[in-house]
Image 1 (cartoon, rainbow, N blue to C red):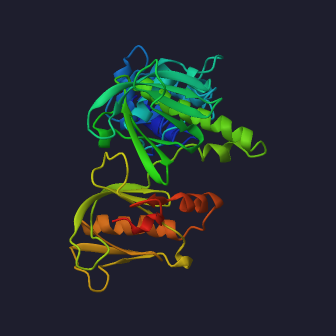
Image 2: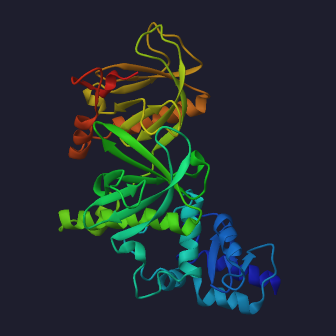
Image 3: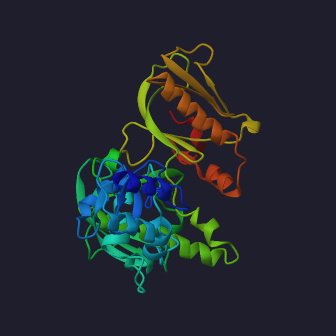
Length: 383
């Protein structure tokens, strides 16, 4: 009978919807929640197990013994039917996680589905209301200390405000429509953390926050997305919802440490934290800097932008070097390994091959830094 049950499970895995994880779409299925009736990957199974057997009972597809009643439950439900039930009312602005997404996103998605039954209820989650306020721990602009700051989100006014003193004027007012937000657990060193990024006076500003409760920080992430979606729906009433959802937030294409020289061939290499944010290639002294030390706009290769292996003529080759050529300046960089270098080149090349959009041209025009007075200089001149 055990062999028969294993054959049934194998056959069920071939059915529509069951060949990918019910929660993250991974194709590496080894587990199942037999009371819910779904197939899972190892990572999502760990979250199911952490919720407790009163919510989800998990078994390995091959290593555990299956009872006939448990097999029957898998036959009766399956991933497709379970999703119709547990994902019935997922807000359009909610980011559905994929296999390699941050742990907090996957964990809160699973807990929202099966523990809180968030997407089965008629009443909509609070983060979709366009209004949210609460305290987050925020990193200081000039130091590394985190202090509690009150944040107030208003979708109606397109603002995210934060206060040093509650009863005083806000320390800053950010426009939600111009704000990007990403999970930043590895950078901040806290699993429940976010990085807010926006343009201010011609350069990019980063704000780093966290909260002790993963549900709270995840709700802030979704609240920003929901507010942005509502603004876009008003601005573009004829656009499809699926197209607008793609514009809400975006993860950085690539981040990591690289060595970089100054503009002269004789300049020495210095360690910089690089962030590829769509068409902006930013570099920082430290990965948690409030502002990048420099920003490079990546245009189209037909306009004189290209990237090559090796150092430019006359410059010192530092191990795994590569060179970015722009109409304004040549950038000499070096990675710590051949694989890392090649991945950076591929990521940059992919951007350079894309045609520019009107939004790209707008970002390029705004990337201005003022140095030594009031005369604006192009951001490419930064070292």
